[in-house]
Length: 310
Image (tube, rainbow, N blue to C red; front, side, top):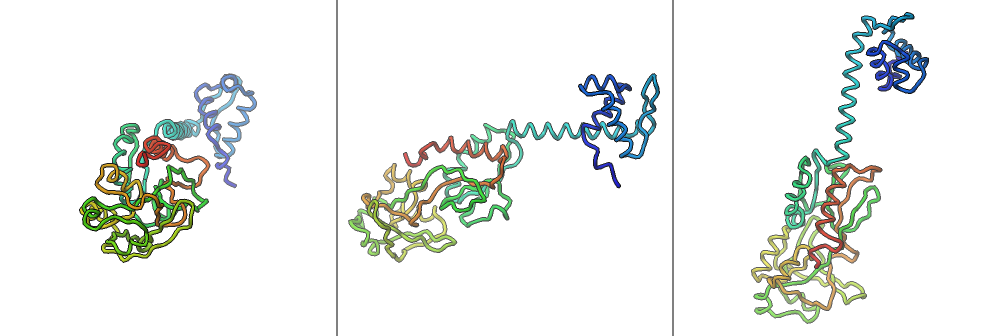
């Protein structure tokens, strides 16, 4: 039977103390235990190793050759353990090392990338990897620590920090409205030039309703469809047609007057259930400090009401 598995760090520390003091009683007083307990621990260590580590007599305890050899290894092991413990403690004091973030492409460009310099300045030992994709990824299969996701939150195997619920707007440029006119009713959508986002789930459905009423889907034939939101925004800004986009994407253009909101008395969406903007991470008892630090930083940046909704 291999007894070496019973050797723990405390046993090694007792051994090192006895080696240095060459006295059981002195070590016992220092560790606030009995001398017999120290003697018994050393005896069990010798039994586990199958080697005598000390010569014992009434005047002194002196190490054997095996004891001298084992001392070098025991010292190295405890020093490495202390270094590992300190590294882990440092990691709980200051975020450090690599944190891997995944985010939708345009949201990442607009509302993550511009703030990374501040994150790095706050936590200079933190290394950041940002992967941007509009496709669904499985956090358990992908090498990702933190995912910024927009949509319904249904997976209970993950924690989620919700930053807000996105709102949608129908909009077109002043040039487009001057040329083709505005909308008085959603049924007029199929008479207009519409620019539609087409992702991995297919083209977005345009839903419209009066507040507190049922959503109605208004089918349209896109003049332009694209899997790139920035391209659709560019086309809309140049007067090509109408877009239906979330506030975090279109809000600045509306504020500056580059796009004009259409059907303001209606609510618009692409899905009938709320679309949350959230950071999700594996459901663990103690989330790593890196993840907590990044989430708290962006919660502070975005605000209780996301800044793009102000």
